Image 1 (cartoon, rainbow, N blue to C red):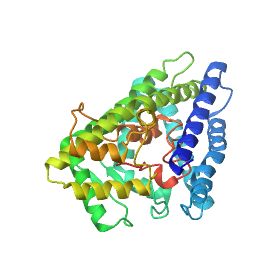
Image 2: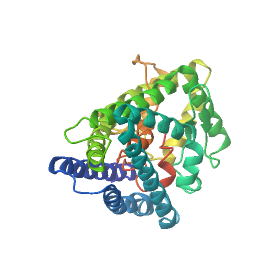
Image 3: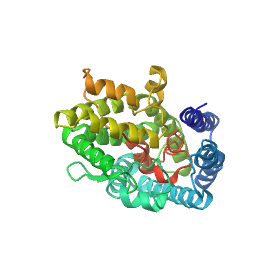
Image 4: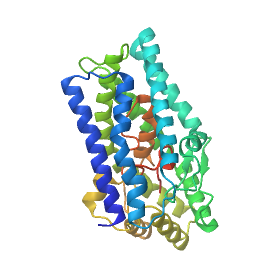
Length: 334
């Protein structure tokens, strides 16, 4: 059992447990209040987060550092964000119904997008503690901000920065960003039309949240494919802009080692669970380009972060960020 495969099984367990509980509550009828649902959410996550943030890294010699103080801080702040969004939805929903809530959630998602970097600092504290922190691209299309870990070697940071600029210039990042927003808005609106669901009372909203969690699970299965296409698309775009094979190889390998250190995966595992292609496949396609449809860079992981204002319960249960508050806002990217 490798570290990568152990984390994968942890993610499968966490997501599967939350989806199963959501489906059962939706089927049987939730008898919880909103605070009760948030408390249950925190309780379910507690052992999973300990395994992902403390036990597994120590078991595989990844030295995660102190766990509980940073974790509890991040978990409570995240739960506070969900509570704030929930009661804002109820207030607006009781006044203007689904159209008003749709507009509210769009505004909240855009606020989260604009404040992604400071929000990551607030939730995760210092990004230096978790070696898996990769930063990402924050901000609106046309006003992007490339975020990089300060601990990375300068040569790796320079190559990754150039490639992320290529992601913006190619349009793939914009497609991924927009797809993630539309996916969440469509899913929440559709979930609000389930029997007994809605946005005007607590009971209705609870059923909407449970339905949206199932919708988010569907996104975990579908969005990684277009995200991988986006990675290949940006790799080729950066190559045409002059990124050399040696620079590309060094940066990709270095980033993978800071993550799961799994350069090769089986096609089935990668198709279902990984929005980031394996290192070997990326190097092969960099040398011998293969035609792929236009991609949507990072759509799968933008969708998890943008699910916060839609009250999604899966955003920090996936294998890459379970138990790692530094990675709840900026999930790992290529």
